[in-house]
Image 1 (tube, rainbow, N blue to C red):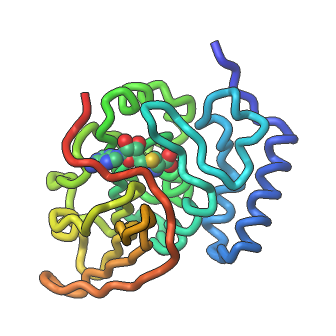
Image 2 (image 1 turned 90 degrees about the horizontal axis):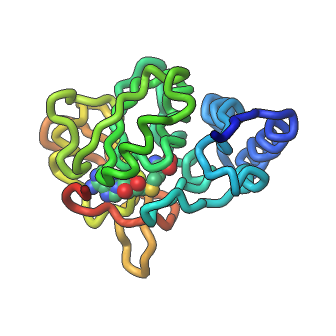
Length: 219
Ligand code: SAH
């Protein structure tokens, strides 16, 4: 049985990571504080314990990854999270991004299409710390119509296009932050604002590299 410990060394490394993210241009203090509070090494295999606070993505099994801290911070910052925001996340993966949003006191609804990851996440060691994360097994292209509308939507996999069903589940005035394929295996980070029932505004940001957003569920 693995023992989860959060030592002074881990906390020190986390502070350094916070400083690095600040240097890289992250300014939202709530995002930085959340990242400094969350033991990222709990979300990774114990083999990564010593390197969990490097600004890198890591494998989490099933060919998937935990996003790089800079990417998590960048997307979280673009979402402009307010306390109590209802947020839909596509791509639960390691739960790290969901935990950052939950730490910022959002109400998070997160969907994963890989059954093995979804099942694995049932034993997540910090589950009781985050009663404000709700887990779903399903296809993110469909969203969660029963729980819509959402204040914010975040997609953490490379989207081939902006899924219309997700735009439909966004509140008017709400944001969707989504990396959309831009050729060359890179994605352009977009922020979509729903300005009225049938109009959106699009802002374009940096390039990133995500694993693909795939159609359908994987059992
Ligand atoms: N937010 C995650 C990032 C995981 S990588 C984290 O912080 O660790 C992207 C995840 O999206 C993978 O787990 C992948 O299985 C999942 N995914 C890809 N396409 C999906 C879809 N259509 N619906 C739901 N999840 C999807």
